[in-house]
Length: 301
Ligand SMILES: Cc1cc2nc3c(=O)[nH]c(=O)nc-3n(C[C@H](O)[C@H](O)[C@H](O)COP(=O)(O)OP(=O)(O)OC[C@H]3O[C@@H](n4cnc5c(N)ncnc54)[C@H](O)[C@@H]3O)c2cc1C
Image (cartoon, rainbow, N blue to C red; front, side, top):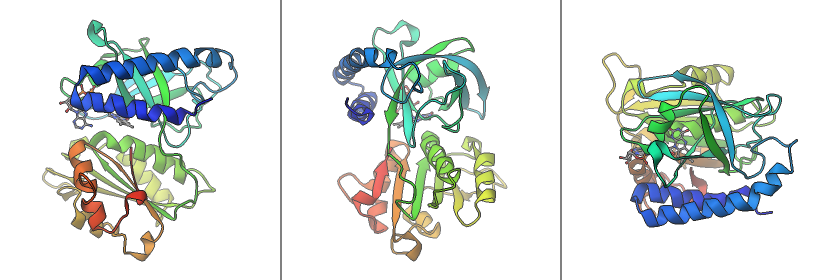
């Protein structure tokens, strides 16, 4: 059986299709999805006792409820078919969503990251930022309780507790969701002693969500978890520093590779293309290289 990680190149293809907007790449991705669906259908129907997303397969879930959590982000809670079982997703995972919004004949495929505790049974929760004219985010924001959506699991970085002493999570905008999944997964695991530093860049104070959740994690794990926010246009009286995720900001956050606390560190990045380019350069270089990180120390969701 091929591992679910085999979907990752397909995801990259659909993501590139998204960015490039080429129908050719999208058609190739669709053909790939069809082949995977056909290949896995029988194996999934034969394993009714396994959590639904513990192996690759397409599953349609019913939307239970929605909640607007800031000016442009909605939390969507989907029911799992067996209320007594968790999703079967492991740290770190995303779900590929598949839809045909507004009668399109080509499907729209986009990954989203469940933000609920992966061990919780019965449901998954997504936090979806609405992009103006965004094909999938507009569709997801239009869904009402009782509507359905089709998902397939995608394995991202396979997290091994204590493999690294320290992990730096650098997020931009909606790129916070994989970071939240990982930070919570690490800190809720009593056997995992990894230290976690989160740096999250957003445009305005109103873009920040999950703030209470991160504050609770900081309180529960003092000295082990720290969240640093940086806002491009902070409001008057904002508690957050102003600016972008720059070399100076990361140094100030204690994330220069030369610091003793970063002898054994993994750096994870998830953000808009401009931010990823600034951090990782085009072909080498970039802020993370300037800070002393080797390419093998850096992972992009
Ligand atoms: C592994 C992974 C996990 C993800 N998890 C989440 C998640 O949990 N929640 C979430 O909201 N999103 C998440 N995303 C992003 C998501 O997959 C979509 O890319 C996003 O919702 C936009 O899709 P769309 O179809 O609405 O927009 P599109 O129709 O593809 O694009 C519409 C417009 O929005 C702009 N745009 C699209 N994506 C971005 C971006 N990331 N930053 C800035 N501008 C952009 C485009 O340039 C275009 O102008 C994740 C992405 C990856 C790769």
